[in-house]
Amino acid sequence: MPCNRDAYINNNWKWTGTSYVSYFDGPNTNGWSKTKVFSSGSYTKYNYRCYRSLKDNNVGHTPDEENSQWWKDVTIKPGTYKAGEEIFDGRCNFYKFRALTDVTVSLDDSSNDRQDHLIGAPFEKFYSKYLYEGGVYDTPERIEKWIQDKIALMDEQMEYDGN
Image 1: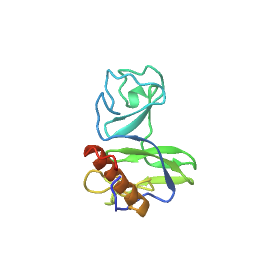
Image 2: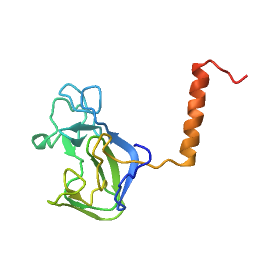
Image 3: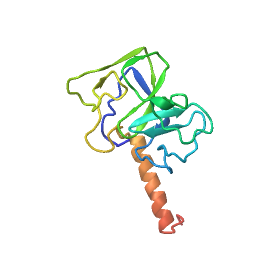
Image 4: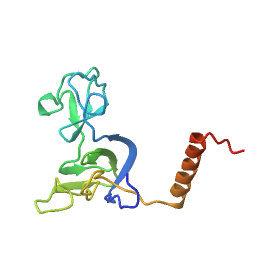
C-alpha cells in the first residue's frame, strides 16, 4: 500500500492482512486460467471479482453463476454481513476484510468515490490511479527500517563488510 495517504477503510471492517488477490490476471498469477488447477479454498480473480474454489482439482470451470458448485464469489456486494464474516474488497487488488459488527452494504446510485457505488464496504473510496486501494502513513519505525535496509543493500552491493 502506498505511503503517506489514507487507507479509507470503513471502521466497521478490519483488514486481515492474510490474503489478497493481485491486479494481474493470468496462469502464472492469482488470475483464473482454464488450464490452471485450483485446490479447495484457493482464490482467483476473474472479471474483476474474487472467487474461492469450493472443490479440489478444480480445472476448466469458469468462475461464474453457471459453475457455482465449483466457485463462490467472495467479493463485496450489497447485502448484510455478520460480525466475523470475511469478504474481499478492492478495485484491482482485492484484500480480505473481517466485519467487526453486523454491516449492511448498499448500492448508492449517486456518484461516490467508488466506481461500483457501494456504501458500507470496507474501502470507503478508491484513488484515481493505480494502486487504487489503501494507504498507510509513514512512522519513525518504518523510516528507520527503510534506512537500515538501504544501508545493508549498499553494503552488499559495494562489498563493504563494515571494517
